[in-house]
Length: 577
Length: 62
Ligand SMILES: Nc1ncnc2c1ncn2[C@@H]1O[C@H](COP(=O)(O)OP(=O)(O)OP(=O)(O)O)[C@@H](O)[C@H]1O
Ligand SMILES: [Mg+2]
Image (cartoon, rainbow over all chains, first blue to last red; front, side, top):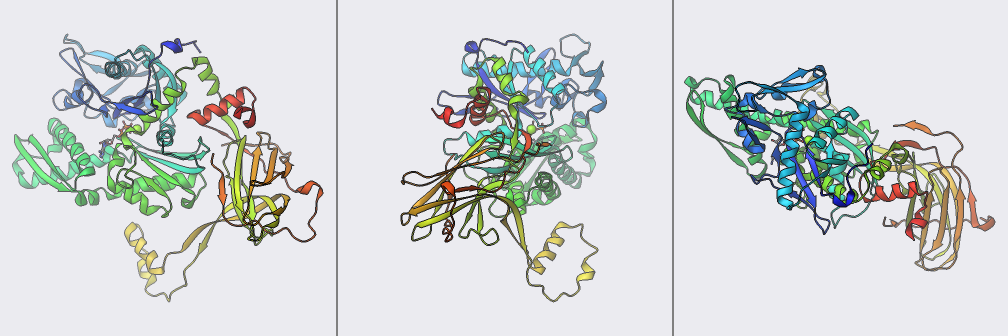
């Protein structure tokens, strides 16, 4: 690809560009990511453009036009980029400008000038105009002209979609330094915090956006990230949650004002209902009650009502449960167990809802940490995770030549052998059947890798055996004592209700599930002699990409030590995942 | 990365265990799976640098 602009002249930001909202952020001199508010004071800027007598409105102002000027208001277009008309789902655009086929791509027919005629504006052009507005807001804030960005995309964004976005950005005066995956940006946003500690962990990023849900299971190994599985769903979405409230308030309205009609049956009423319902949903993330208030909702009647959080959570519970199932499904798809999940990062605007966090927390083992505003006081705003990650990545690479960035992101560099088993040491007993395996390097760790372990020694010191082995993670299930059963058959035909089946389980007593290890392959034995009382042994394992392992065993603070070399199996490598 | 801390003690060396240089290789590491690592974050950049310049961890440390 092209040589790109001079890195010295770059002013780079992070951009998250969603179907519903976009955000911009930059990294300060101290390495801290900051999300930029636009002229309206918004950090979550609706990805919407609207035209009134040739004037272009953007963001929140454009969103307001959905009521009076919906035909000239363009929304929910990100996923149309680089797509063919026959492959898109236009449903989210029902209450705004409709996408149409335009040669091999997609466009909107809108009146975007003072003239009476409509123009056909391609999704690429719309995107360019949107990105220009974001770029201008960032430039105004920073006091210098932004000309480059790292942009986040969903993990299933194709190369065609990326090049369409790349072109639209270029036309907006933005050099895209790199596209990064949204869930990876979220992990980076957390890992870049000063208090973060590097650890090997399995992280699930669960993103509940406006039009879609995206789940990613990520192995994080020494700060390097590998996506193990992803799940995407366009049915479970913020729009569905808004709909729950729209239906609720519409019914309340009809109950009170029979003459007013159903506000869902008139375009303008529907638009008002929708905007206010989304606002109520957001209020319920913080408060336990919220007011719904719309002037002239339908039939010229003003309507106000209140709803409490509990009611909303009840009405939306099936959507929360569906989202939780997606998360569980993704873990399964990665061939992992819930017990393997160290952390769940809740992302996407709807993850501000406390009930989403609590539903997921209840579905996972107690040891799994759920990072959301309601479960962790130090959680990062779920709406800002992507853009923060993008801004951090931008600061890391902005001084590189574009060619260097492209080389580093090439499969030659990124496709990497990963360990299929954990490598660790046998403790207490040298016998594989009774010794306890403790991993030092986890499975799914990319090579090369270097890891060090500090291991306790027997109370009296002396001579120890250090046995390295490969271990396979095993889930040990302990069934509770069977209770005398009665009336079981009668309940069996009714298992479509989640709550019911939960109760069944607790009646039987819950089975106990634990993570244990089985030694699958003994690698080596080493001896360290004459250890002092209370001393520790350091084991360093250095595994190269061709599976040769260099091991060093020594007494901490002692002299000398033992070295050993392990060679990889001579079998050819497995296919990729 | 910080060291892995293991608080269970190592076993005592069995009587009569002996081996040249006190190390005995027994098995091989199992075959690996090729996967794509995400080109994101400071640790990836260090990885890419090592890979492109064919450097090892300890050469990188210097
Ligand atoms: N504080 C909040 N509480 C509850 N929901 C919120 C809150 N803030 C935003 N949302 C909801 O989050 C959704 C937008 O999420 P996000 O900003 O992640 O969108 P996006 O990435 O543009 O989504 P997509 O591409 O899926 O449409 C909307 O449904 C919005 O109503
Ligand atoms: Mg999103």
